[in-house]
Image (cartoon, rainbow, N blue to C red; front, side, top):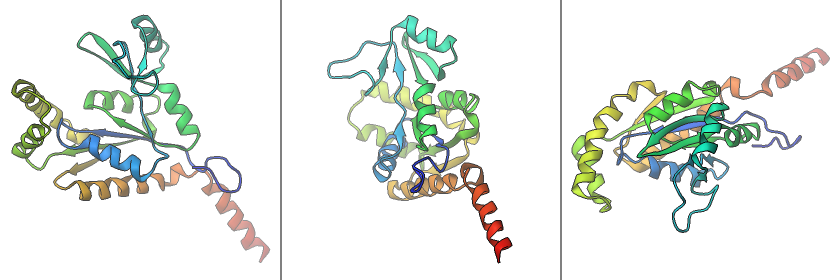
Length: 219
């Protein structure tokens, strides 16, 4: 966010990672958080898969061919990447760095593997990670079935994968048990607000304190 007097950012943007097993509510919470603060940038992934009808480059994904994607990896321009069903997916570094320089936060809706790669990247010190747990496994399955989007086989696959995903909860800075979307949303806002106010994310504090000390000297 710009400083009112100088027009320059008064803090460095941070990287907010949300992870959870499918059905725990992270995508809904991500949308609510961006509705609360429209300055938050959602991380748009790059992929080697072909665009689907209606998709636009830079909106749903950055669409790249395999050679271009590999070149980004080789140049260290991907914060994280993985191959899924024969296609590469990943998070380009350049748009994130630009947002950080502008004092804007970037939100990542990714799994634990992507989160781990970003925490181990050159931007790792700027990461705030949140893992979202369901209140129970029966409730997790109920939410997946409530979507009415997936077959029984797909739901069974998601449930089987959930156990491994949940096992990584302790790698995160914060953990929310999402038994109420409203309560979890409020907690997520509190986390982001507190992290934005950390001393090391307010570069103007040193100048402010020096100014206060000069004012003492003039008394």
